[in-house]
Image (cartoon, rainbow, N blue to C red):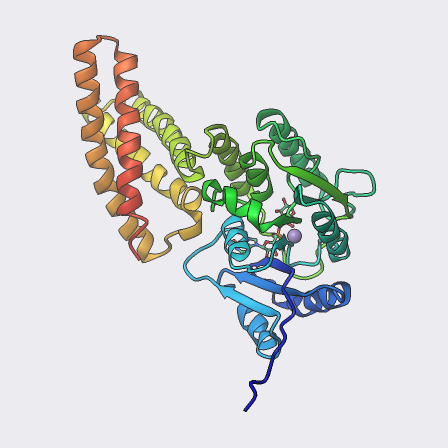
Length: 371
Ligand code: GDD
Ligand code: MN
């Protein structure tokens, strides 16, 4: 008997769509891709972080009947950049695009993006840009967000030496070989994967920008919030460290610094207003700082795995426990340094650095690992 020969068409493009509560956008989005990508062998991968609205189920419903629709359903995790990275890595195609799942990105430029990568083997990345002639933010962003985006772009260009006009775009297509070359230093946390990519490529990539008009969102709502802004500053610092420090570590240090302030203010209050002894003021100040550190870390540093309800209470107690050891480390280091170099600011600063590192390492293992 002759074996039946099957011919497979070679996959060219994976479109990665990160989603969180985009159920109503799934079907229209796939229809738009169908229309645009007729001459291309492509697939679409939705990377969904267990959206409560059932986005993943909606994708599965369609994927059951179609071989070029897939879903990566992640549980217990949140994060736009991480979702994009996982989606891209899941691709077996030579090229992958990242596009928002809310119909704000103009899918029609995917064809010219792909052509640019195919035509010139030196091109590593094509950016869907709102800031080059022909592109614009249209009515896609509010005035204040548009301003924020301009400031963020300015910072990326100045501090990270990125020459692209729209490093804040969430719409791009990349050559997978190039992507895999830098993926290990990318940050999973955060919103701005393109900025991270461009910085990680250290100016060594050939990048092309293709204009598009950012559309208004029809269904669902934006997930951008104030934590995203702080995460962005974290990303800039992470990149300035050459990718060696994580956004998480930087946010943890930032929260630690606010803790120092909280402590000083509280000690002053107990000491000067409530006239407690220094000993008790100090203890209460430390407890106040630990408490505010815990809640800030929970909504910022670890917002992808925020503890709520009873878990938050258990987390707070474990955080107290973990930090109490850090406080001992702090005092010990400060003492040793002070006996060698009697400069109290210097000694106490080193002590707090020591306890910050200690607190980061141990709370990472104890507090936010508890499920
Ligand atoms: N898997 C996953 N996990 N997806 C997410 C998450 C998450 O934690 N947060 C957001 N998304 C998805 C959304 O469902 C949407 O498909 C896409 O990521 C973009 O999120 P939006 O909430 O719509 O972001 P935006 O419109 O405010 O911001 C977009 O435009 C900015 C330019 O101003 C994004 O493309 C940004 O990356 C871009 O910088
Ligand atoms: Mn959007």
